[in-house]
Image (cartoon, rainbow, N blue to C red; front, top):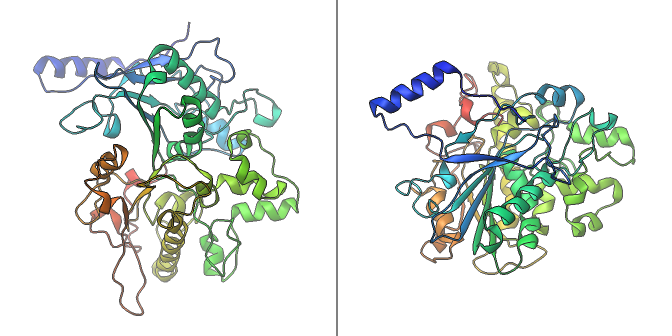
Length: 434
């Protein structure tokens, strides 16, 4: 029998005491369901423990499902992947028996009036592959680990069809944050195809536009912008560019077998040794057929500081100017990349109202309560998803700043967490690498 960790006794005691005192603390309202050990293909976390999901059954009158894919970074080297193995990001053995849904999974109709009655599903993240992998076999090439995030998602969908009525839904919203948002982008077409045209499937990814393409004068468009060190040196390059140069035309190994999930049309448009370009949202977006509401900040801290740019987090005075110039460049690249949403630049035309976008001029990873013109994204998503037509003028908000001649265009949203004083590097921890 699989054993999952329990809440430490002193936490349990505090929880019971607070409940007795009537503090209003809510117990977890979403219950864990582990995939059967007979699941095939897939069903495994990195360490071989069985994957699963949390669920709260909707009201009798609702045929709406909201499915959320959890984020949590990723890994691509043996050292990094082995470090995640055995943690909650690589094993289900440490997951709790219940959680409380929040945001689009919030069951409180006072705070989430339009989605509170839905059947809410939260998919934890334990494969470090952005929910994209289809490698269901361990080997020396995978360092003895499983990378089957998409296979797990597919197995969860089948389990929900068999046990919870997903196949009879009228509307399904697939969402996620960070790595979960990447998963939402690349799994939404598969989900729509699996459920069929009679079910309205839409995606709402948050903080998953990995990565913008390079600006003219930098690297080729299929690469992300050059990293900070080379940008400041007047050179061009980044980690992916270095890898491609080292391979000298050879094909990048597909350790996680993510290629199985990528658009066949995208793969056909690129050379075999450029298949990896179809894993970038800058390239892949135009091939996604399912309606999307894209939520992404223009100055993503995960990309700028941790995974792509590697900008100094505590720059000294001599680095302030170059840090600000790099942050400005990344914002320009993001806006240029996401312009394809505003231009309806998709291979498959999408029915009205088309894809939505909510992009703040904010230095953050993830957009939650941040507003544009006094509006947050949740009521706009509700109007867009249900096609109510009450907020159509707000379906596409790309925040812009007034910049005086000679000044840099830096994050201008008025929220406290959105701007950065590079001398003190005020980057809020909640918007870091997640």
